[in-house]
Image (cartoon, rainbow, N blue to C red; front, side, top):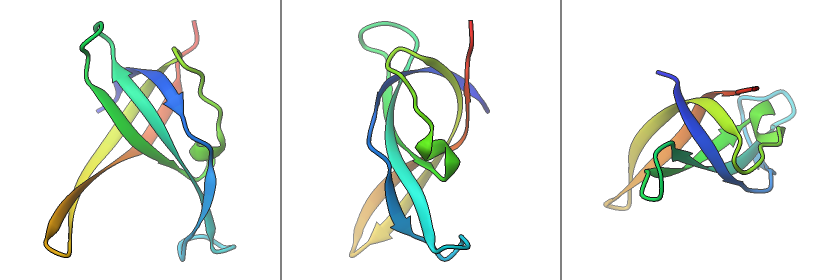
Length: 92
C-alpha cells in the first residue's frame, strides 16, 4: 500500500557489494520519512536501493512510498529493516 509521507532528511548514497547486479555494486542510502500529522507524527528511517538511492529528495517534499518491514535474527538478537519498495515524488 502506498502512503503519503514527508521527507525529513536523506543520507549520502554509497556503493555496496551485490551479487544481483551486473557490475557487482548497488547504490544504497538512508531516507528519514515522517507521517503527515504534526509534531508527534511517526517517523521512519528507511533504506533506498538502486536508482532510487541516487535520486535527490529534498526536506519537506511529499512522496508516495511503499515500505517493506522485515525482521531478521543475528547472534540471538532481532533487528528490523525498513526498505523502500516504491517511491514517487508528488508534484503540486
